[in-house]
Image (cartoon, rainbow over all chains, first blue to last red; front, side, top):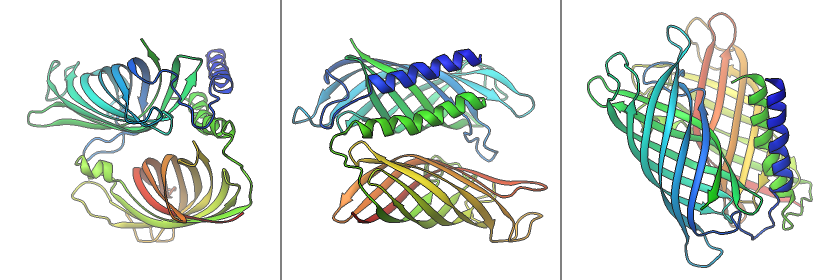
Length: 197
Length: 189
């Protein structure tokens, strides 16, 4: 396990040291327009359950496919639209520590890239489907989610890929809309890669 | 998440922006420079979403010294914290002090900061009298800097703060994901 993390750390530090160098005024993404595919992993340590303590931990991965275009001048901000899906496993810690299936989210969103594409802001929303039987909601119950990503930091990796780090984003999950409402607020940290295709 | 991945994530958060800034020829990195900030913070994201647990409202300031890219600073903050369920009230007051470091990166557009120090309970709380001293820790990973004449208006969309004014017996802990806005003044070379 230790060896695995050492390798992972070395790999990412090497990426930052070699591919992360960007001169001022240049774009973080060599080809700024077109289709994009992104895969990221996320974790949430201290989320919120309404009227309870900060114990809504979770983790998962997401896939994003979208189109991006430049606004105005060639070096101006870029905007895009995308579709995404994510698998979010929940860590239940109230009676015993265990991982439950959580939810599957699918939705659409819009993004804005600033400062030479070094920063990405995004907002997305869609359906959130419960994948396990909860206390008052059965598996398959479908509600909605809203994902707010105020600032992801981006570094180019080589000529095509971009490493993306979201320090903190907020996701409101409401997979059970009946009474009682099943809702959850996750503050996520995510890391992933984006490539054009 | 264990210690190793967590520490790796922290190293990544701090090292990567530094690298990006260092690669930027526009940055001169000369100093020393003084700076001061005046800030207000609140857990508005949770409040908007309808979560009333751990409400917070805080105001404070910093005074620091450093280069154009890095600096160290002292921080003082007066925070009002909600006690828990039962409505949007703010019942406890805590004075958070501390020392911090920050880095300005991506062409002066962004700033990240780390602060830690004592948290002093200013009001009597459950089983604990005012005066109890604990710990305060805050990570502000990304703040947008908007230039406005001689100051910057800074917006930190989401920061994580951990306030623990009571550490003995039954601990009193406030975990907050806060949104902050501040005015940043700088002077010197």
